[in-house]
Image (cartoon, rainbow, N blue to C red):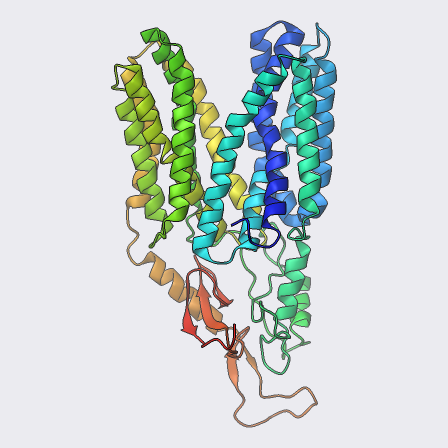
Length: 516
């Protein structure tokens, strides 16, 4: 994967910035506790940071989709880094103001740059083959898992030689340098550029949909607003002008919705909530088990086993050439995770709990990878970052809510029952995805194909004023001529139809390559 042009540079910059997410949590808790002398205050500060981060994640991703990473990421990263620096200054001395720390924590959480969703969107630009994209997402998930394990370890080493506030400064430096390095990658471009390129590729040059022989020839223009709202009349006129026509000769350009109707995004979000709830409750349940059996080392070994299993599962998942729909596969992975964790609660020995955590971890990275893939396939070109952010937000929200619920239930119910209750949401989320929707996909595809075929243009009238040619030729807008080495197809992908070359979920015929 890293041999793809610009992939190593782009991925490395994103990982550098995302390492700050592994260091900031523990640094913030330790710094707030040392500055206020209260663990409860530190918990409130961290909760406010996490709440603002989770709730505003889709809004920040929408800014990325609207303005592009190159324009939106640097201001976001600068505000986030400055806020972390202000938190470091406020916690440098004892007796810090609780209100000040809480306000700064809210500001930091609200401005956290969505480097994870941005990088997953960039993987879709770097990789066009579905199997390679799955490998890329698996690699991304495994790397993120390693970062979240490595970050707290770095903070633990740092606080031995410096104050916890230094960890906040390090986190600020990491996210700022990583974000700036990411936006300088050649892969990153403004969000408006693809729209203009698509409009240009739809312009007829002797035949509808031929655009100077570029690799994206024949793709439909997306002229609607980035937020997925309905296009205005001026937007439609602009689309007509982009297609080289003014008036009745213009080609109507179908506007791609932000989220495709009938897509699998709701399932991806629901399953992500369930997975987040299971893992969010698991931390506290393992601690309760260790206390109950007087084996404190069980906590560290269990968390390490969960992370190690997730890394192994993610790598294996990316290496397997999966076939079939990703929706049922996501449900099976979620169900396997839930049932494994429920069975772990029946263990009576620490070694059995550690083994159960390792087995459960095998399904974590594959499940999240599949959810992100479904989100990417469900979103339009101008909403992919938002779609990934919704999955991320769902996971974090589920994790936070389950942590609170587990804290209430532990000590009041048997521990085995608590494990089973923690597994219920992820199992239930899996059941919904396994229920088949008979004929719905076929009907949706048929409607989109007919809708696309209804968009036509009278190509019989020439541009020099010679009109009324007999045998006026009608063909669908955006159809391009067959050229050697290209795949001519009508793309049907989760409720949107359009011409595509080698796109996922397409129906078409191969044209023999000529010296590719």
